[in-house]
Length: 294
Image (cartoon, rainbow, N blue to C red; front, side, top):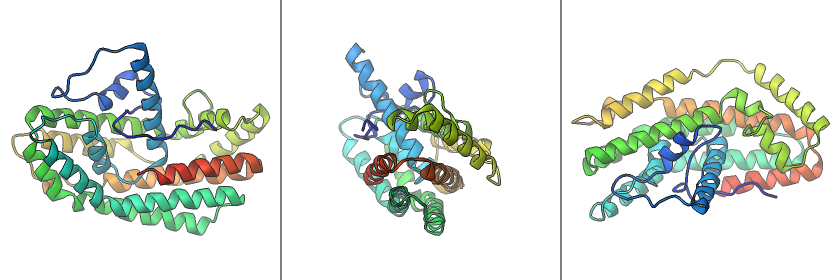
């Protein structure tokens, strides 16, 4: 089975986006010169971008806070401050532990339902609620760490960080758009499922129709403009002459967790009864692999 496996978020970003967005999140800051591109390097970047597209498709354990943590993977700083930045990076991951565990449990719940042939809606809903609550607490838990991070980074490094945060947000938004969830064309979640499970056209048509119907029945619409405004508010504050994380209010983490986790669960719940036992077994294993990613 060829489902891409995450090998490290230092590698990339992008899902159904332009190469510019993918490159923005994986390019080191000016402190780390980038080597000249070669065909093999370009292939590696494409594969890395696909891996992070998959990450954003499955993991919704925090919005802006998570984007900041992911961006630190490829920020690149001078040797003198690297140990401090790495320590702060570790602090962020610790502060995100409740959401990470909730994300892990949701994916395992979906994997168990996939293997059994039916989702336990009560368990799935409870897992989503736990994830949303944990994500909602992330930003407040990270205030001191973000202030310390601002203090240690240079203006150029802060600019590089917010550019990467913006790129991760762009990837997440496109990856989790309703049209992408149900899309059968190259890059869509359903297209990937069809290819990896060797789903024949007639079966794929049934799945596509079912997913579109399920998405149409969801109440409430996600407004990306609200999250966009919060991303830009953070970017403006973090690149200004002074910064206090408390002054940047954010409910984006909970919004993104709710939207992403709900659609992820709905997708797998919808396709479960339409897959063969062998297909469900393979897909359940894929979800367990995703759940185990740290």
